[in-house]
Image (cartoon, rainbow, N blue to C red; front, top):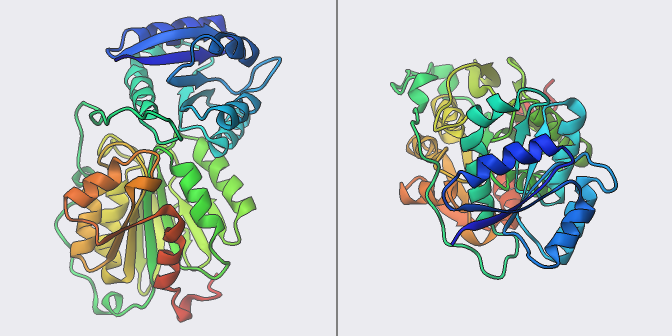
Length: 367
């Protein structure tokens, strides 16, 4: 049975391009393509879509107002299709908080190139959204993870372990590494807002396009007791702070003596993603070992499973979000299958897992 998709965008050209892109994908049917939410609501009276591909900046009614109305009336998976602008990024992050499943970026110009370069990304986002756990009465069965070539973390950080200096092995500094994807923005908001100001140091990879991570970090920083920021190279990893990998670049944990910091690097996608959870987790296994907690949360695919296993083998505690509370139980499922997970817990219990690690006394108050 095909996935029925509605496109809501005020640009006729965008509707045409997106419609052609999705209609060409096996298993997807474009049900409607309309110019604004009011027209969408009229069409939905006769045929309700499985997935909505939604612009956020439109006349008559903005995308976020429409999204909130839909989620209150009949929760439906929504993929935001937004331009790569600062204003668009902030609005799209707000849409994710309101219940959207994922973001796909679109250019203001050169839509033909978008059609060629981003077809797979949009199709996979729609397929992931179709099986997302958003309260649907009849959820679709799981489908396969995205097809195509993939690279391991070896392309960024070699697998061969490096001998740790004695001073590094004796550090008491602790760090929490979190990896997540589809549904992760809402999940991270729930976890991080539950943490008190004095909490363990956290490093995060959330699969998200370039520029959107900065807006996401800023929003969380306003909501949380802890500091949340988009990571920059040489940022100190310390209690009371969460660093989020910037979209389009990899994040690695490093150590200088007894202290942790991060490095942001360029490089090819790993496990089909940049930033990659596998890259972060491998670096945490290498630098922190038993002083770390690895958490893998909602998301499509298998990014993070191999890295979490490396963390567990290095002595770290490892936790997965359980299936019932995931929007998409893909990444956690794969990590469990590989033996990388010590225990699975509901989303509502993840903050307690983090606090159980406890910040090191020596790090409290560090600049």
